[in-house]
Image (cartoon, rainbow, N blue to C red):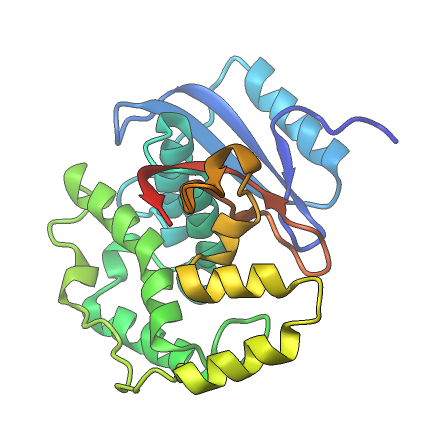
Length: 263
């Protein structure tokens, strides 16, 4: 199987896209990273990237007047990758949410044509019909997550003079109906533990329910952080899945927890 060309990535939809650094961006003054999408094969994207890097003429950036939201998102997200200001998980989520919920409905709009009413209608469409993949209505919290990459992109547009005002700032966040959380009662918890008492996983369930540990903290817990005699557990890491695509196994990434919480 041929090696994937450098700077070429799968888009999760069967296609490929490229990234190439071509000097500094005139909008931000930072290192300019060009993203081009829509290639059918990795080799095709690789050839296009090589042409960009070897050409005497740099690819012009989109003009401020005609810049689309897709182009603004590319500038913002590529800048986050270059600066590494946010965690890998956060950057992955921003790209995933932009691909699923923002680009399909707003990507071809000119940035200067997007007003609060445009974004309010976008949120209503997500609430009623969801993303383009499932067509299922989205919960208010999911829509708030979809707003996150937009917020950063519009902030960049304002700071560089592309926009005078951030239209998302005047767009109300979706609200959810208040609901009373449903938790097991002490009697229900004891009944469950009694049912699991003979199972080999009983110590895990007992520990989870008594300590309030999260699953991501449990899977990376190691014996050096457990003091059985002192009855203390130090939680210093947690795991998250990054890059999970339908049917594929996500990669667990241990992360240091700045708050060492004895259990």
